[in-house]
Image 1 (cartoon, rainbow, N blue to C red):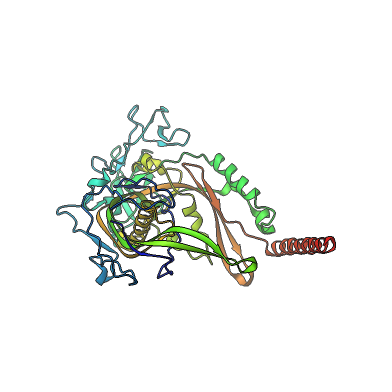
Image 2: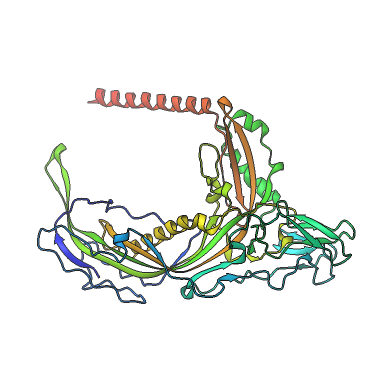
Length: 481
């Protein structure tokens, strides 16, 4: 699909042609549906004809080369007139939702060994443990994932369906042991103990208020381990930390919290048309201070058509966490502790979040669909670049189209150890700092209040020392000359 069109160096047009696109977003592994071509030598001519691409549909024919000296123009894409970078196939008929709560009942979740209901997570093993007989067991895998290459239309876990904002946060459960009715406030926790028989009642069936996700990732990092990680992280930054923060810093108040995320699988097809440049010669002209490096390059029509798959793209499902205003908070540190080992998620069971806090999802799919589309497009660009390394001077894509053939959405509770600190700045302005620990992998990132006078003083001293050393070196060279 690559065809040579002109010879000689070409000026930049539109986007810069020399830079590779950014890598895919964190948490979005890519499995492409094509084989990478053999790597040619830097000055070798391109392979005859098209660079081999394994694809489901044959590529469209390249446009004929323009007359000598004519500007390069790529073929129009099917949706170029509408300027729409994405298109979606119609979802399959029938119910696209996947029910994760089939077979589950609200009420008493019993230990399979002794029948007790006092069950909690054992962080050391990641299993549920009965507090009576000490028997440990696990919930089944979430079971939603499937072969992404066969994914068509729109599929959603029930936990990812649109929130019914008129649904009540207060749910009444009937205790199957004594018959009492117990009120559960899902804003706080999906569990409550029966005040008569002391059995623990759990809300496991999905209700349309965003409180029950499709899956959950159990905590693996203990509080003691998280405290040590946070203390080491802050300790490396204590020199420039604000004195008030150093005095008030205490890891005893860190919180284990489950944060809601949307996890998306995408089956897509990408089509790119553009102009690529391959350097054929590099040489220097002039002499002395007037030397100039020049490049000769061949320009080629470049086309790429391929299927690709995005596995477990992870996006926040809380409006507060999506707020990335760096003037008032450091929410971006939450993204920095991704990814999570999402293959280890299990079907939601309220006992996993006992003893921890959780945030309720308050964002629907439509609110983050554009963000997901942008990240999928970036992944497609990266994949196209990986398959076009022959064009060392870069490729300018003049037309792009990404068609989403199938997508699967589910909501997952992911575990985080969180230390937060509210800094009061001059003028009464507030800034919320976080230090967050991935409670599965132990990855840590955070923000610490800076003592600006000390930072500016140290910067001034360093600059002064650098200036003195520079002047001294200049004088030594001058005297020695």
